Image (cartoon, rainbow, N blue to C red; front, side, top):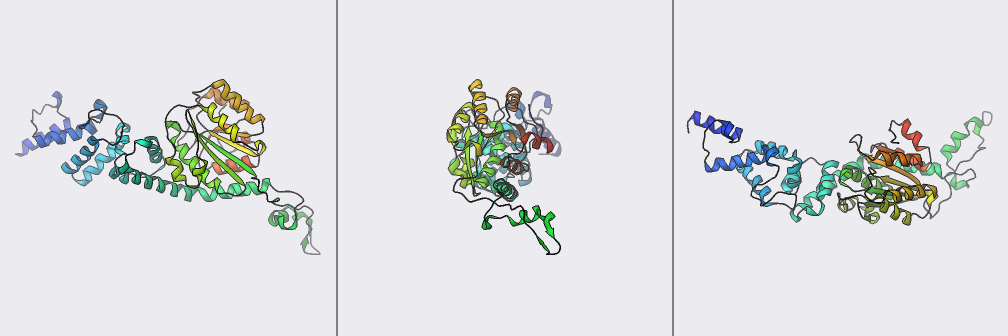
Length: 391
C-alpha cells in the first residue's frame, strides 16, 4: 500500500464511510472490523445502542458484544489508544452501564461515590465474574469516606450527647470537671487560689435506655444514589456510638429495614437496590411502627419529596410524627452535587408544619445531627450555615 492509499484508508476510518466521506476507499476485512469498533463508540449518537454482535441493546447482564468489542480494540490498537477509547466509552451513559459489568473495566475506573451509586443501580445485573471487583471498589470508597467523616461525626455527636444529658446535681463520679471549672471561673478566690464550684455540671447518669434514637429513612430511587452512599456511611458511624440507637430504613414502593447491616456499610450498600418508584407514605408508616420513644427520636427523611403513593396520607403521617414529639428533618440531598430537583409544594407543606427541609453536604451532616440532638432551632441553624431552606 502506497502513501496515498494509506492516507485514504485513514480518512475513510475517520469519516465513517457515509456517502459524504468522499474517499471511495474500499476497506479490507480487518479494516471493516476496526471501522465497526470505532463506529460503536464514536458514532453513538446515531446508533443509540451498543449492537456489537448482540441481538439487541439494553442493560441486561454482561453481553458478549461488550467483551468482543473490548477484545477487538485491544487487538487493533496500542494500549495508549485503548485506554483513551475505554475512557471515552465510560463517558457515554448508555455504554457506561454495560462496561461497568466487565471486571477489567471496573478495575481501571477511579472509585468515588458516583461509581458506587452506579453499581448500586446495576444491582442484581452485575454478573458473578464482576461481583468481587465491584465489592473491592465499594470497599475502597467506604474506607476513604470513613477516614474522612468518622472522626468528625463521633466528636460532634458525642459532644452533643454529653451536653444534652448534663444535670445540675451530679454525683461526684458524674461531674464534667472541664465544663464545671469553666462555668465557675467567676467564682475564683484569689486568697485561697481556688474556684468555688457553685454550679456543678455532670454528664448525667448512665442508663441502659438510649439517650437518642436516630432513624435514617432513605429514598432509594435512582436520583438519590450518592445520598444513599453517604447515608450508609453516617449510619454505620452512628450505630457504633454508645447511648445512640440508629436504625436504617430504605424505600421505593416497598420498605426494607437494613439496620442489621449497619455493622458493615459495604454489605449495607450492596443491600440497596436503586431505582423504582417512591412511596414516602409507606416508609413513614413503617417508621411510626418502629419508633419507641418519640420525644427522644430524630427521624431524618432523605428524599426529593416526589410522592408516588398516597399524597394526603403521607402529609398526615408527617404531621402526626411531629405532633407525637418526633424531631423530623427532611434532607432533599446528602451530597456535594449542588441543588437537587424536588417537589416544592411538599417542601412548603413540611416547612409550615415545623419540618425543616434543605439539602446538606456530607461535611455539614455531623454538625446538623449535633444541633438536632441538642434540639436547637434547625431553621435558624440552616440559615446560619448558608443552607437554603426550601419552603
